[in-house]
Length: 505
Image (cartoon, rainbow, N blue to C red):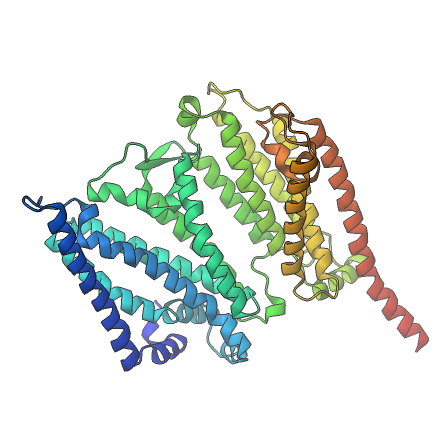
């Protein structure tokens, strides 16, 4: 077991953050806020129950719940904000090289950052948590419910710290980290709530929103919200699914951090190619395990399940492509070795598209699995040929976009990945706008031609193959060939220049 108290990186952050004046100010503000909330709560209860106050109060009306809401928002976001600035700020101040070149292992650095950087958040929120716990005891809130809630808050805080540290590792400036913090502040809760509210055929994904799984511990139950989720046919309490999801997703982030904390920014590569494929397997196993066949028979069309499955696998394709992007230096080195016959095409330093294609086979296997599971449902099934076409169409667009980013990395563009992603974003926005302005509006349930040709939107057209989508598949395949030719020319230009220089000398 790693002794955190003797970890030099953790001690460094503790000494920098936990100074007496700062501790007194932060702790005093936390206790003052709790006191003001207690006064406001007392007045509110007296106004709502002027004569007969129920004992105990409903959980949502207790002071414990009021303080808990503030804690649940403050702790994860404070941890995320602190870790988002950690490495990016040190890199800007030119001190990160001193940190990563020490004799500390990557694990020791990781533990020091994760628990040391947000130490003031743990201290300040911890004082409020003690006040909330005492209020909960006085208001007869179940102790087991409070302990489980605090455990999940700790897990969520560690997860957001890991996520923030990963982003801080790959961004160049803290200002970019601050922008990502704002995006995550709005997108993460909204995304989790949207999945939970949508009651998708994969109810286990809703466990990313922890609140639903905690409700049974407080004796409250909303019939419209699930209290458990199927995992390969076995009903598992939603709180255990939440814990499993955050622990496993956190493990992937830990793997990426351990691989890269001691490397220079130019050498950072979150996963190896095989690890990226393992992540694709992980996602598909989760989706197959979470697939609710009874829900498909009772409430959903199978096409809705297919839409969710394809959307999440499209994300997996892009993750696989992004983590297998190769720096210009490594790619040129691989190209020379490949031409000399000393390395194969499936190399960690080669082009990313073969690995995305292999991820497509993994996605198709998952597609076939949920098709077989839903074979007895009342909804019309999608044939394996249609499934193969849908997977291939998503693959073509993912490979096209990733190859465009790889080409950007071979140019003299600064921050090529960020700018390439921005250009792709503008491309998709332009296609959507032009299709809405110039496209036909009486298309009888079909995806507009512009979207079907220039985006993968036709995949989500209720499992039906559309003629425009076939044309789009052919057109985007030609674009991929053009990008491969351009990348090959970039790679071949440097050896020719070196040979010409050697001949002239």
